[in-house]
Image (tube, one colour):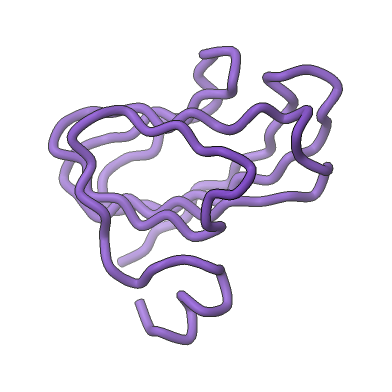
Length: 107
């Protein structure tokens, strides 16, 4: 991933080691490049604190899968190893909200 991509998406071009589940908050970087040590979960932030249209780009650079859960703990999508996800908030009436998630290959 190039530095220009990191600048564009508002995150870091280096992978963050992930030794526990991660919960995103409204101020989290839009780009999340993650390297989980095992199957882990990324929890989306409380949708009521975001405007519809807010998105996160989550890139899994590991050989392990990631579950992408809403703030209520419900699985929205599973992100396989070496895949990326564009997570787009569609509706924010509840903490869980409604997320549209598109999975993409990164290799």
